[in-house]
Length: 400
Image (cartoon, rainbow, N blue to C red; front, side, top):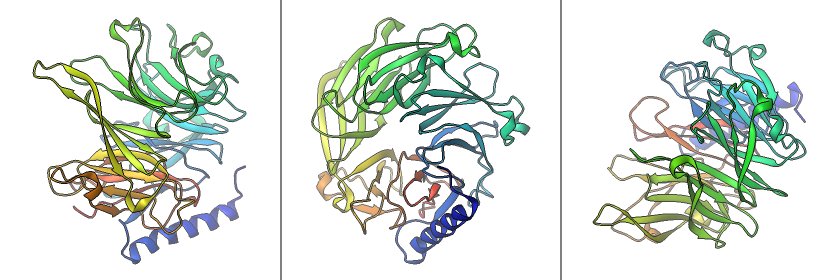
């Protein structure tokens, strides 16, 4: 249920004070609020919606029952709240992503909803960028092939069948859960013509991350969190006719969000088992990729058990990429919910140094995006938090 305006105001004040306290006590990085106008921010996905060269973002607000777009105001104003709009209602929304489904040059938003809603929606975006912040300019429609069928958790837009417009690779959880795809018709705006095709059974899909090495067909990193199908694997579609699956690991952890650390060769996955896992396939002298998988076990910072998401990028001033990890710390009071792990290839992962990013503000963080938000030459951390209602936030890298 959406909060009333008076209650929302109290949440905003409390959450802002928590971010300020984090900085004042010298723990973590400076925290900046992008959007805090609903409840239960659940994931951040990027796209340049107004074509100004700066990455905008879309977020589903699960408890608030809406999907919202935030427009990046540019480096001079990124530390302020970003101009934002509700693109449409989306009860039980779990994921939202941007894609130009109808090829009109305007990015649309796709919302995946779980719970009793169990439906996917398209929020058609206005063609005129001047209307992006006008909620009435966005039109929301359900995708009939998904209505009431599964608890939809994640969506990855990509061209799959070589025909029509962009298709949607989708994953779900619970009864009838699967990884499958929605095929776009000749007229993508006619959602009654979209068709769903099942690929694999699933338990609880967390990630469908596109991995496309230069000159190669895309493959998808899939993380399945629960049940007899729990696993980490790659999906690829050679010649766009038959899905191929390559398992990285099965049944050993509760696999959460994953990321690409080196296209086609290494991938990292957060787990709820006290560690981050990095999977790798060696490159043979012939240039081909070895079939064998190696797994690197990286302990979570501060002995936090429940990892949520991971991102990979150069955080400090050296030339080595590092890991940024988010957590659910509701059962780990007094520990930070976002940290970074400095990779040191001269030491084993148990001896890598770990650093606090978020301080103690926030308990349940979600997906992470690394990008230079303030244009100062280093990577900042973009994420969201849904229990203490910090909303959509970014942490300013102090290295710059």
